[in-house]
Length: 336
Image (cartoon, rainbow, N blue to C red; front, top):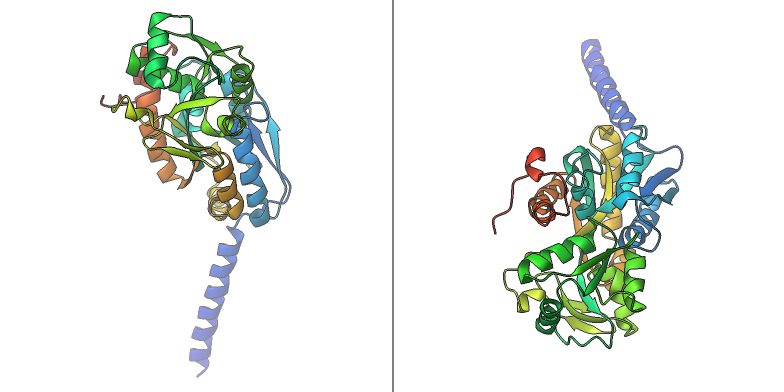
């Protein structure tokens, strides 16, 4: 009997030790977390992460502060996040497109493979013009661009940004030559189009949705593979209606931390992210900003990033916008 009691006691002790180790491996932040946004306030990244952070706070039990650190097409903020202590208290937020382009633009040596990523939304670009612009559809826009090579001004959030990438894809698909006008963020780029400073803007749907509803911008097409619905406005056709081989172009938005971040921190982020991605707040935001909900975590997000990299980095390089060949980073080129 005594021997049985000893065995039971050892089993119970083992269970308690296991529970203790498991509990010890669960990361609970003991102070506020900072998310560095490498773009100005009001752009797609900033808008997305503020909603996401407010939902993740509820799960993690700590305040999450969003700090805007724009400059160098997002490289300054991303570098600051990369150089921060790997203790789980500094994250960054960006689009996959912008993050992926930084190395080939020679702005940051850190590739997308060095970040653990989580993506909550996908935004296609909208090919938008001012209400009085003569082009009534994509065919007419291309005709004007070809008749006036290098004269039609198209704004973007900066070299290598989502809007710039969409423009380069558009140029390759249509054979047009335009004047690219970069700004320090998505919001300024859209405002430039609304004010008539530029003729066309190809920034993301969430940055243009409110202006479309207000009829201050007129959408011709979206760069997704299906029609995009903007509540309060209606459907915007896919550019594939005119160019069937036009590749999926847009950006996924979410969070990143360096891949050597402690595993328990990554696990905690994934759990909180999963709850936030399924929240009513994200669903409402997706409807308001005309974007698609998604929930890509860690390995799934990396798979998507690899696919995006094989398209956007080569387009940027072949257009002359990128200084370094993607081949130097072992990024394969997607089949045409």
